[in-house]
Length: 257
Ligand SMILES: Nc1ncnc2c1ncn2[C@@H]1O[C@H](COP(=O)(O)OP(=O)(O)OP(=O)(O)O)[C@@H](O)[C@H]1O
Ligand SMILES: [Mg+2]
Image (cartoon, rainbow, N blue to C red; front, side, top):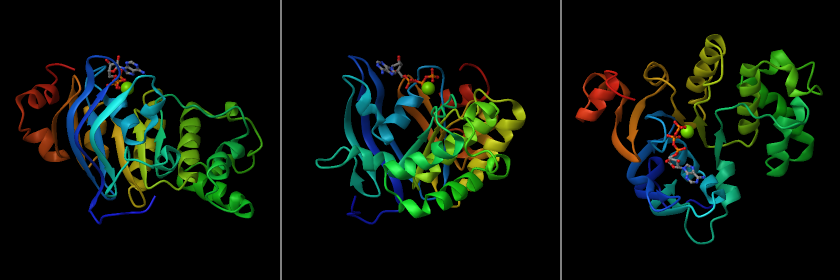
């Protein structure tokens, strides 16, 4: 995908509205993600958090009847524009889901898969890429002697790191993580949170945070969605200490959500 315009925003959505049915799941969302930052999005159940992530890497295309209007640009190029290859968008903008979902293949094959399918590197270098991706995900030492084993031998936290390694093997520019620690114990969650902050050196990240405390720990920018509307987005500390919108204040003080 050629870059057509220089802009400091990695992803920039303007007046983005998303429908699955008659009622919009996201309404007139405007959000800009700067290079090498972590943006945390929060909101109650069904507020549109997952939809936001899916819209940013065109996984929404797979939902029957879903419609996106407004502008969504990745490095200055409209990702819903004519001639854009959705597969290429998904390679550049990777996603990790709430439930760790390793494929029913070996640990090594899980990581090699993304690279092979997308021909990111030549075949000869796949082993190197698997090692580098697992190292970046903080899992290499745990699994280097059992790359041929099934991921079922791993703990849920390790499985989630395996899914992150698989996403990293595609050498993404942006990573979208949807409540990546929701199903993990506190120690595994802490490791994933540390990893998110480390990955900021090489990627731009958008994370659906499970809690406000998590958002405060990991993010540079925090955002609140309510019923499909982006109520507030701002620098994390300011978001929590001096929110502009009354609804954000109510949310951060635990009055709803
Ligand atoms: N594939 C789909 N088809 C139809 N409606 C959908 C689909 N996916 C989501 N929705 C609807 O869109 C709205 C937003 O859903 P979404 O999953 O984005 O919210 P969420 O904030 O991620 O919720 P949760 O906290 O449960 O993860 C909800 O009303 C949901 O029912
Ligand atoms: Mg969700």
